[in-house]
Image (cartoon, rainbow, N blue to C red; front, side):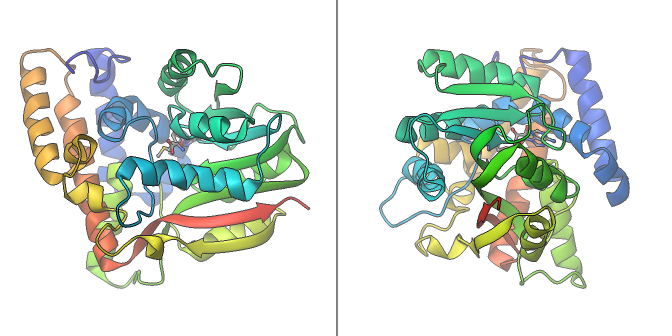
Length: 332
Ligand SMILES: C[S@@+](CC[C@H](N)C(=O)[O-])C[C@H]1O[C@@H](n2cnc3c(N)ncnc32)[C@H](O)[C@@H]1O
C-alpha cells in the first residue's frame, strides 16, 4: 500500500496541492471556489484517486441497495440501469462525462457492446483507467480522454448517447457541462445521469445544515451544492427535453441506505470505508508518512476524506442531500 497512495505526485507537489486546496476552503469564499472549480477538481483528484481506488474500487459512486444485494452488485446495477435507459446497443458511440478511472465505462461497455469514451480533468485518472482497460482487454471499446467537460475537445454532433455519474457537481454552473453534452450529441440522442444535490429537506437558514453542506463540499472538492430543481432547470436551459427526473434514495432497502458502506464494515471494501476502517487506514497512513514511505500530505488527505465521510452520513441522516438524483433527457 505504501507505493499505492499518490505515486503520481512528488512530495513537494503533494504539499503544494494540499496547501492550495485547503486554503481555498479556509477562505470559505464560494465565489472564489467557483471561479477556480476546474483546477480545484484536478488538485482534488491528484490527491484522492488512489484513496478512492483503495476504498471503493474502480467505480467512484454510490448506489441504492436492495435487500440481500452486496455493495458491489448495487454499484454495477446502478451503472447497468444507465445502459438500459439510454438504450445502448453494440456499435453506438457513448460519452462518459467525468469518468474517473473508468469502472462504470468498462461495465457499461461490457453489458451493451457500445464504444465508450470518457472525459476526466485529471491526467492521473486517464493513465490509471487506460491501464485498467488494457488489463481487462477492453481497449477496442473503452477510451479515456483528458479534458475539461465545460470545454470538451470533441466535434459537435459526434456521440449517440451520453451519461454522467456523480461528476457534474464539480462544475460551478451545471449549464456549462450540460451545454457541452448538448453540443456533442447527435439530434435525438439521450443523456442520463446521477447528480449530487440538496433536497427539499435543506434549510439554508439552519446553521447546522449549512455546516454539513460545507463539510460535504470541502471533503469532496465541490464549489457549491445546488438543489435538485437546479438540475432540471439547467438541462432545459441548454436545450434538452427533460423526460424524467427523480431522487433514487428511496429505492434502497431501509436496512441498507446508500451511505451504509460509509458507516459500517460488512465487506473488506465496506470496512475500508467504514468509521473503523477509516481509523485503521488513518493510523496506517500516519506510519507510512512518518517513515517517508508515502509523501507528506497523505495523512492530511486521508483526514480530509474522513471529514467528507462524516459530513455525507450526517447529510443523509438529516435528509438534506442525495447523491443519486436521476435524470433522463433528450436532445430534440
Ligand atoms: C466522483 S468522480 C466520479 C467518477 C466516475 N463517474 C465514477 O462514477 O467512477 C468525479 C469525476 O468527475 C471528473 N471531473 C470533475 N470536474 C471535471 C471537469 N471540469 N472536466 C472533466 N472531468 C471532471 C473528475 O475528474 C472525476 O473523474
